[in-house]
Image 1 (cartoon, helix red, strand yellow):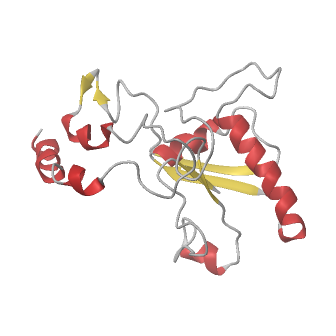
Image 2: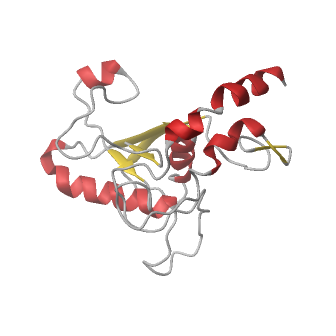
Amino acid sequence: MQRTPYSAGPYGEAMKTSLGPSETMMKEGYIFAYQDVRGRWMSEGTYDNMRPTRPDRSSNEVIDESTDTYDTIEFLLEALGEESNGRFGQWGISYPGFYSAASLPYAHPALKAVSPQAPIGDFYFDDFHHNGAYFLSYWVATAVFGYQHEGPTDKPGIKWSILARGMPTSFLWTWAH
């Protein structure tokens, strides 16, 4: 399973052309699930960039990435029925890596393997800020995270072509520094 803020698309009747972190797993017949995290793309709710884990579990209104993952696994167990062996794994790189790691506190008992790869974890040290200073190469992503849409959508909220114009300059700046 992979949970992502980047789009689990394509949506509708279109299908992904490649599944999973490994072609071997796809050929072995593993079942793959991709999910837009709360408030992104086709998912309802409000997006919260790096929603922290909430230790208070006293109500169903307490949400975090661990509870969202738990609920997703519950839904998939019911939906898949006999098609599932009842064991789930989660993987991801960068933001999906964060969602993988954030699934671990209060994890669903069916979650058996988690592979968070290069997860974001501290905005004031890694990706967007290096030791507190805003990293200029990330200016193109600033408008993406924290952006709220009015409801589920399969359309990007920003024009990537406009932002991409600045990428070569900021990319070169990154490598020069």
